[in-house]
Image (cartoon, rainbow, N blue to C red; front, side):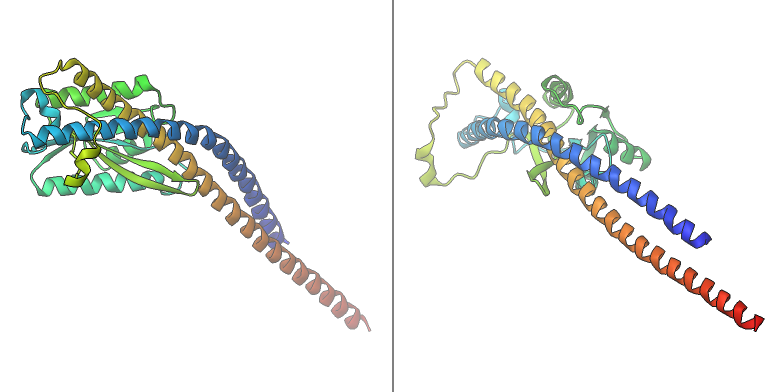
Length: 295
């Protein structure tokens, strides 16, 4: 009898878990639609500004006009210290979403260390911060509550300090790592070198398609403003893209958990019915044996 009660209690517990995971899936689905739309709109602008900056970098490197004023485009400078900005979630229950980013950062740290390059970490998101703190790895800057509710102002705050250190010569490269949204059921790890801006590989027959006239002597205020927008929007897009991917991963994880709970309830119901049948059979045998002994 105690076995029946245990099975029934377990079944009730799993059913409650199933209700919770189903509710979380519905919440993530609703949030995903909004985050996906924001990421899609932001992606268009982000790709265009990246395209423009890449072409400028190509022209600057082509004519060898990299100097003090064009440090952002000097891809041949020696790299001795790197800032890695990585984005993880503030919340869990989203499958392998966070661990993918963390593994990528760990691999990059090991790779740079093998080249005698010093690495500094700037962490966005509670889960990444907690992981590296637990591992005893120093984090230069920590930002909590940013990845779960991204705004342009928060993105400015994160990227501004990193770029200031690059300009001051404290670091030689700034890399942005995040797990981005690919589609409803999958995410894609994205590693972007913010500075120095990498020039694209352009074939000779592609040069005539450029719509930009490059004038090195022109007022640099336009370029400075463009660079500022590029830095800020790259960070902002990474936050929005990461949030959409987080909701996608959580929706998928909760769907899998709901299906697993459903299968577990079915197994427990079968075990309960089997145990109940055995209990009834045992009682019948005892009754029949008692009647037989009275004859």
